Image 1 (cartoon, rainbow, N blue to C red):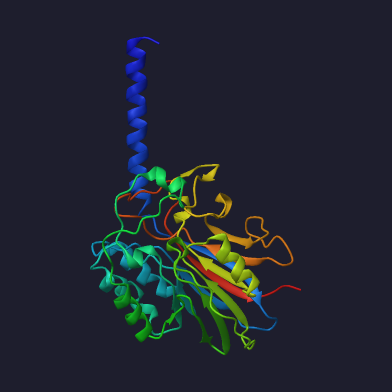
Image 2 (cartoon, rainbow, N blue to C red):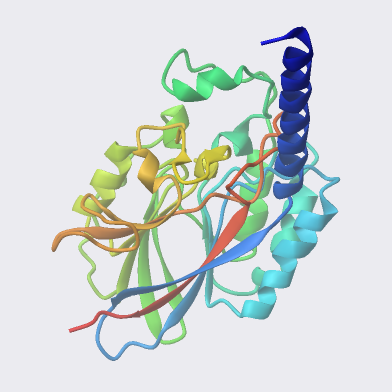
Amino acid sequence: MSAVGLRRLGAGLALAAAGGLGWALTEATRYTLRRHTVPVLPAGAAPIRLLHLSDLHLVPSQRDKVAWVRDLAAEEPDLVVTTGDNMAHRLAVPSVLEAYAPFLDGPGAFVFGSNDYYAPEPKNPIRYFFPDAEKRVPDERLPSGELAAALSRAGWVDLNNRRDRVTVGDAQLSLVGVDDPHLDLDVFPDADDDDRAVLHLGVAHAPYRRVLDAMHDDGADLILAGHTHGGQLCVPGFGALVTNCDLDRRRASGLHGWPDSRPGTVGGEHSVWLNVSAGLGTSPYTPVRFACPPEASLLTLVPRQG
């Protein structure tokens, strides 16, 4: 190739890279509500609208994200569950509570992720391809205790290595959760023999296989998780390159079955529904998404068929 051709090729590649970066920056604020219908309730039960939020990674300046989450109150969810990584700044607790304020009068539950305990730090993106290599605890602590106390005072149940129950309408739901598996904080709670609940819900931040297996064996009807950001930078037609945990790439986001699944289905008789949220935020040091817009999930739980 001639020198002129090489210059043209270089200019074209630079232009394409700049365009891709511009789109990735824009896509990080294209908040999307995913809707799924999940047949997990017993026959005759009234539908339950469950709003699944995850990975807000809020900093106080993100007013658009706070407003978008607040506007989800128009969907009138019966239950709100957040699967962690609410904060990305030590002063973010008021912003998180402002975002969740329209929902705090109703039933809710939460677990925490690493970015509820520690502030994000710059890191080499290549490390995401090796999530268990040289895990390092960041230096700056976040006010997780303050956030947990505020949510608990509002009536939301803390599921960090705990079990609890919530009442939605006339239905009682049992819940089991673990603290962040990515930081190896998960300790699965002892069994509960009370079987009055119409739904058993498992909640975790990071969908590591050991946690999903434990919740499956515990009899969960539905598991909620986040952490993956859906891959964050995806390849159109291929999907996520990485999940930042040991979950397979094809389940990086969306509704699937565990352990057997085809996308959007429970693949076997003994599978449980699993919803992995791609989440609403990013680290402030990598504020980009590509082919993976930020999301929340509205799950309409309905009676099982047949």
